Length: 323
RNA sequence: CUAAUGACGAACAGCG
Image 1 (cartoon, chains in turn green, red):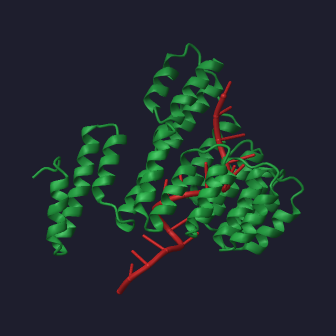
Image 2 (cartoon, rainbow, N blue to C red):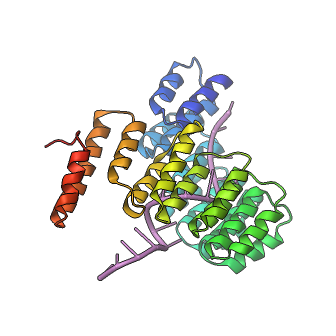
Image 3 (cartoon, chains in turn red, orange):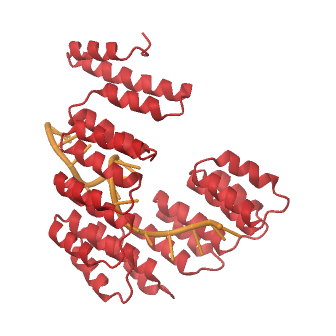
């Protein structure tokens, strides 16, 4: 059953909900983990109706099942529903408490989050990190730092949270100092630091860090693409996009969003975005339809703005456009 | 083997 469950989780994580379901139904006797895995899959897909169906048909939901539901509402930003679920839970552990904490933070209720945090029967490093991030994300650098300093144990998430806190407050030097003090840096901390410089327009510094990274993932590449795009350097954005492809890393929606941004701010044509989108899509009719729909809107907007030559140019660049 | 925290794009980005 363990390997079946691992397979189901893998399918679900990559968005193959149907395949996960098929596998689940083919199992001779699914255990609680199998049920919870499917439950989480529906939650991730945002299908709360199906999630509830699962939950109700489960033999015996445990604290993991409950927390899965709780966390789904939390990430949807539905504080009321999250509170209701939390109140109904027959058993809670530190993970459920932290998920509830996240719901307060998500709703911007930082004071209530802090009260909840103080009431927690157990706190681990994840709960602490969430609380530090809450202050950091809401501009309370001082309180974030105070909590950070009071933590006996820190992991790379703790440090990265503070690095980002300084960076988004515009204090790049402080951010870099903290980054340099880190004992263990993972790909997330590296990418956070790269992003800090890239967003500040310090592209050569960003690039230098990027080049010294031990490992790079799609988010790291996106940070560079977006950095060049927002600095108006569409060509540089495209270079990094190609670099990512050459490394065999698959672009995601954020990569495409960064390229689209480069089209409006970086001096490259919208046809580059369309070509890339076609390249990396599933080639389905639905996708082609929405791309055409999108382009049609762009051409329309150009025409209505009186920019007829650009509209025409775009029409010619897009032979696939319907009349 | 399943649930909670930190990094890229979409909420605290520009224009009006």
